[in-house]
Image (tube, rainbow, N blue to C red):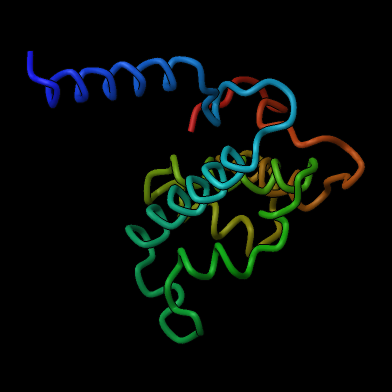
Length: 147
């Protein structure tokens, strides 16, 4: 085995060990690390915007910034709170990201009408509006969470 091959094997082993020891955004216990928070924020915006861009591509056409992801990351202050408000905002975004276009349209109409009954993700949206800054960040507040 050449020294180059040994180095590659050593690096690969180190990556495996580090990966096995690190927490993921989905399985942390207690306060998430700064890196986990970044991953959760990015994932939440990507999930929500994938649905919005697919189902309502002109939603932000006449506003600045017109890009959903940029709007999400820069115009959503609760996304950066490390308390119940931040986790509820992210949970709502991840929920929207799991919607079909039909579900998204129904959600959007429900939000416009302020009708928070029976539509997928509307409960998460409403809970995000009524959060407590003094309660802890908890991505498992509604049960198990998988991004």
